[in-house]
Picture 1 (cartoon, rainbow, N blue to C red):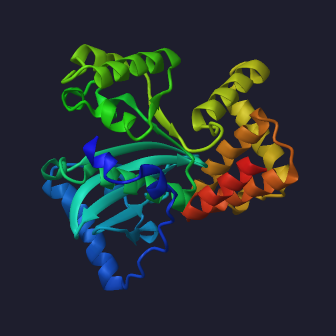
Picture 2: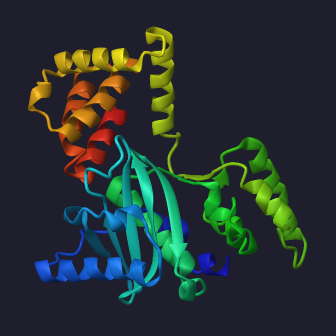
Length: 316
């Protein structure tokens, strides 16, 4: 908490990050090597690092010696609708944290891991810079963190009181009842000297995710769309997925004038998911459909352009 008090979190998150560093080929190769070696030498792994799409690699130089590299995965490993974008954070050139965000429009599921030697000191400042970077590069307005990050089946998260680390940044339990319990526990912490939440209490908080909402509403997520698609297939197609997909693809290609024979296998895969989405959610707006058509091609080639299209889709 003392770390967080040393800087104004709200002001920092609102501060633009500027353009990524202009790296030549040799510098880019060296930066990527450091990112990969940091994981190998600590016996850790994330999919974006292991299956990195090097063309998506960007390095941002921030304040107080902090720099952050972000990167996506090769198309064959990327998710159909979300973009899993990993990161490595550095302090004065040394790797101090790693993790990633599962991004869908203005929404992101976020995870952070601080390397053991750096868990004191500026860990809160590093966390704030990561949120700031994702917010401004991808215009994220809603961050959500899963229970494992603060203790679900994770004894280390309970022992460290990780829940309160996120809480002080403004993250709150998504579940209303858990949120009320956290508020009561927070009052105990403020009113009782040397009070510390019990492990049982902290485990109870892991019964749901926590979220930081920087906007006025909660953006749609992939689960909502998937649920709607499955509901539509069950209701209108009697759970005949193959028939529903065939009909959705034919409808989508006709509406956006797309020749399926001209698409690659990866493009067909994302197009099928978009087609089911368009049919289940009854998307008929011509501009939205054209944005979806563009997504077919950008999803597999440029995560930044793809996410920009998603944000435009939801704003219309």
